[in-house]
Amino acid sequence: MRDDRLRYAAGLVLLTALALGLLLWNVGAGSVDITLAEIAGSIREMSGIIWTIRLPRVAAAAILGGALSVSGFLLQTFFANPIAGPFVLGISSGAKLTVALVMVTFLSRGVVISSMSMVAGAFVGSMISMGFVLLMSRRVRNMSMLVVCGIMIGNICSAITDFVVTFADDSNIVNLHNWSLGSFSGTSWDDVGLMAWIVGIALLLSFLLSKPIGAYQMGEVYAQNMGVNIKRFRVELILLSSLLSATVTAFAGPISFVGIAVPHLVKGLFRTAKPIVIIPGCFLGGAAFCLFCDLIARTAFAPRDMSISSVTAVFGAPVVLYLMASRRGGRGGSA
Image (cartoon, rainbow, N blue to C red; front, side, top):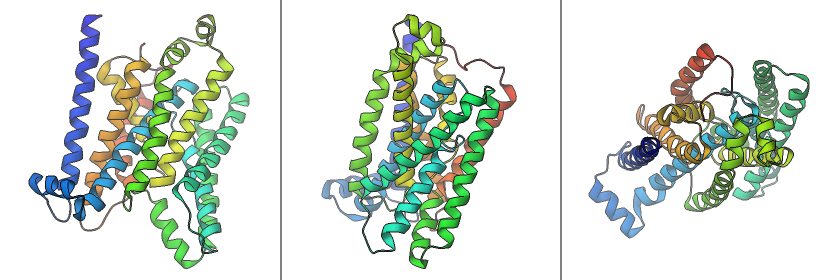
């Protein structure tokens, strides 16, 4: 028990140090490299390229990357499937569709869209997609087929989104195209503040569900015997995972594979699936993963930015392929 606690503490310290190190690297690296002294001066004066452009983008990458990873862990728990995630199950695509509809509807009328409206629209889309997945889960008992159904739902939502974009005004198409590729650029401090509040509350509520999640991982019968209200618990998981993934999509567009790959990498690091350890571990791991990918997206072909989703796919897809090749059934991970 003592060795386990030391391993958990060491893992959390390692992930924290990794995230902070990548955060500083992201702030300093770019088309113009900036020293630590210049970073400190810009922060102190709250001005310059660091304070107005790089720091908000870095903060968004950390917050949204962590949110996406925790969302993936909650979905993997809910479906008892190691390759369940917001992107694979079509939840991100559903959020993308409704945000595109909101943007086209309001921008065509010259109405400025607030960040909260974007989040609300993305949440509605996430819930609609999740609803279709849940309806399919009642008819399809095979979890692999359920994932395929989720992929099909995602493709349908993406096709409708492309149809909407085709008939949008030219100015709206530019906004939609840049956002739909996935990027943390253009984030303001107001956006960071809002996403921090939403993700922080959802993360806290997820952490408070650690005990029911741990019981649910042992099976529904065990969870019921432990006093878990299964119906209410499932609703809570759906709402929290949808809110987290919707927030990511609203601010950064669809981002692939983070919600699947990072939870498994974190479980491998801690050698456990205990939610009280994995939830903060997933947040830190997701933050570090997205900071690393955003660093590559900004610097690989600077000053041109790559799509963040393209970079996360390069590093996340091999993890998913490995999981699918080595899967032996079960719920994945030991408690």
